[in-house]
Image (cartoon, rainbow, N blue to C red; front, side):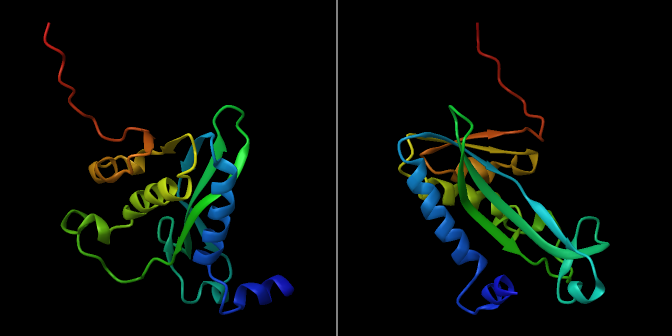
Length: 167
């Protein structure tokens, strides 16, 4: 009951909890080679009453929240350093313009860019930062906007033509 009261407190927000956790993680990451891992998850809510006010998740038959956490791991030992950041959002139920007609900033894929930038800022004291993400993050804008202190490892989704070196 007390935890529920804590979460319902108007001064408590997911963004504030994420900022606090990130600050602690940034301190633990200082001077280390950090692997930051990001991915999205769905929190599907069960009962009809619990789902009221929440948008679709999964294949659209469930309702709930979407989460996009970034976890920091020490590269040499695999030790968990903590939560770097976490985005939480409720997908709206309305129709959207076709995906290709929207700017990246207006797409859910913006979360990959935001998380990478947050990792660069939160982990700025790390010796090096390697961001690992899945193929959903394989798009040009992520590479173009990555912070200078963050290296990327992205599972490829798109086939690319690579120019061979001239012999």
